Length: 240
Image (cartoon, rainbow, N blue to C red; front, top):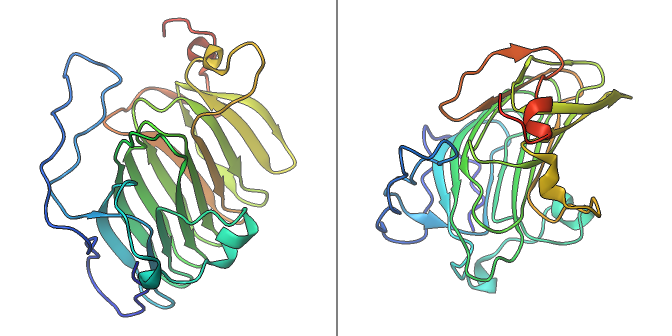
């Protein structure tokens, strides 16, 4: 893990030699994700830049073992959320964050985590793949906009908190379940995936931007949108 407060134009993950890319996606599969680029893999990577931006491409391998002696202490956010160390954490209080992220599959399917935090500048994230394990994604920005582009195959809860800001028109496949108290609770995809007991054990995404605008998109997808989200066909497992 690296904590780097120096300015840089790009932040490639530093850990392992280049690995072979995964198999190319099937073009006939509408839910396919983009294959990860041939860049170094990382895990438990923590990048903090107080006054500079973070820009880069990150391919996270949750099976990559990092010696405990090389890890930084847990961040406040990690401690407050049960002490689980993030597989990737980008924090730029006074700089913008712009990143493309892939999470690789794990044979153990242990839960993974992605954390992004920018207080005074914008966040632009493209999540190409969240892997086969349950992944918790949290994105925070105080006073600048958040643009989050999700994997095309993502199915699960999506929480958007913008009490004094706004949420842009939502893609067709996003259904709004409630909108109250500054929080819009949504579900992406077929709600039947939750099962009869209603307990969700898959990936979750939370975006908090109390004073700014949140925009949600999907990788390579530009469907019609409505301000409330018209994803009830997807929610009920119906064709669009």
